[in-house]
Length: 118
Figure 1: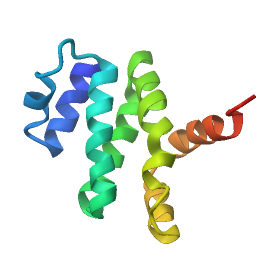
Figure 2 (figure 1 turned 90 degrees about the vertical axis):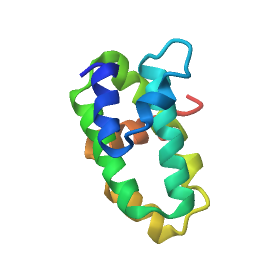
Figure 3 (figure 1 turned 135 degrees about the vertical axis):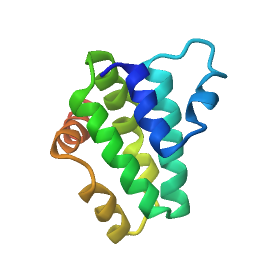
Figure 4 (figure 1 turned 120 degrees about the vertical axis):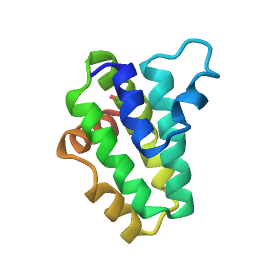
C-alpha cells in the first residue's frame, strides 16, 4: 500500500480528508500520516472512542500492508507522537487506546520508547 491507497482508506472514515490533503504542497506518505495523526489526536482529546478505534484499525492496516515509506511515516509521525497525545488521558482510557493498536505497532512504540537516548 502506498500513500495514495492510504488516502483512500482514510477517506472511508473521513470523506473530506482528500480535500484537506490537497492543500498540502506535495502530498506524500508523511503528509498523509501527519494529517491523519492530527485527526487521531483530536479524537483522543474529544474522547471520540468509536471513530478513534476505527481510525486505529485503519492505521494498523496501513502499517501492516504499507510500503516502506508509509511504514516509516507511521513510525516517525504517529508512533512518535502517541505518547504525547495520551499523556493526559486517564490510565484506563490510555490502556483502552493501546489495546486497539496491533502488536506490530506496539513493538514499534516500545522500540522508540526504550531506545530513546541510547
